[in-house]
Image 1 (cartoon, rainbow, N blue to C red):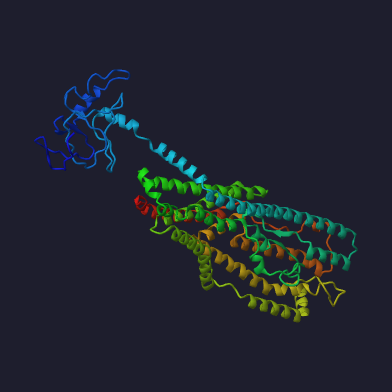
Image 2 (image 1 turned 90 degrees about the vertical axis):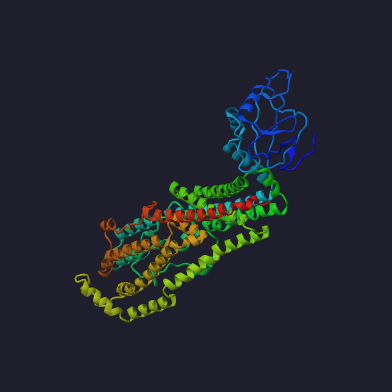
Length: 593
């Protein structure tokens, strides 16, 4: 065999031919070179023997006895001068098409038959993606660190789901028990009214029923109660109206507690998920590409995989799916323990968790593609978690304090004390004014009045001042909630928590509507009982059938509740798409070994 000659030299009196990309060469015995034509290839393919047939002469001698086909990748290689025939290595019964390694990899157009053969041998895209997914799954489950992260995440989230689900079940049972107790109190008061004599004793029996045994004004929880049980209990959704002032004199006899300490008690399930899910994704994906590049493994991936982006996308999708499945199972457990859970709340919450997971998965993928070390990528993701989970909500609350400041609690307390003292000083005048406004109610035999008759006009007067103060807190709180809801996309964790509040039915706008219903019920309750008490009369049997009833809010998810949930889902989806677009723009770094 002759020696190799550089490009541009002459071989056997002929100019050497540099093979072009995607073409094969036909070599003469004397070292000549000419491109192999499709006709010559078809002639050579007809010379391929069938299975079991003896090969009695060299292949490719049908039209050109001295020519042989050179198969294999050709990528700007110098011409080879050969002085003896080159045997053709073919795989019967078909001749494979020559393929060029240089990008783009295309099958050489060497004839219709060869093109069909190459097309049949080319692997399909779904099959390639499935094989990549299977290989990545085997690699994922063989790493104990990944399984450990998922196990810890599932354990903590499962414990929180169990506690929240049982708390929701207990709350609904307590609400049903309160309704039963109120019905028993009504029957007991009805029996006492039939056996009590007329006059002061009948009036006192009616007063005791009106002040303490009114039906509870209960805020109905929605289907996602298990997502926010702690918040539901903190805001006292059960209110008992009375003929006294429920803001001062008629407060419930219970132990005093620190609201700040109660706010920092055991977190709700939604809060636990919003805190732990990003950390689980961080532990599974941080610095994955950078670490493989630092250990010298990524160059092998680049050499073996024509498109590393597919492998990277499969790895991210596998990790995100694993984390979402754990969160979905824990959420299903929490909602399954709640007897009042609804399919709408379950589907809405799973969609919100999927959007939340997509945001953090896209962010983790973007950090894997940045020119950072594995430690730098981990610190960057941890910094993003701290900023979006704690710093951004705190900054939004600080801005809300400037734009929509809450009323001063100290000023409200001082105003309440002043209203109490003012009503106490003018108590006799208030009684006389009430009887003057309601002629025919005051008994003719009485000129002086004692408790409780003398206190009822006082309660009515001081509530005219105290109730607007309390309503201001609920009004401003609802406006702040809506203000934060419009900017919650800056903090995915805050957006997820607000979705949970909406699905549980404890959001500030709904609680404000509940308080308005309670005030209306209290006004109707007082309008019914105060004339009887001021006239020193009890209740008759037919009066118990005309007692005012509390009109609670709807228990189902209406359009007013679902519209903000859908807005948060769209905002999270757009944020995830923006981060994913950044990751796609940085995918070229995957080809760097």
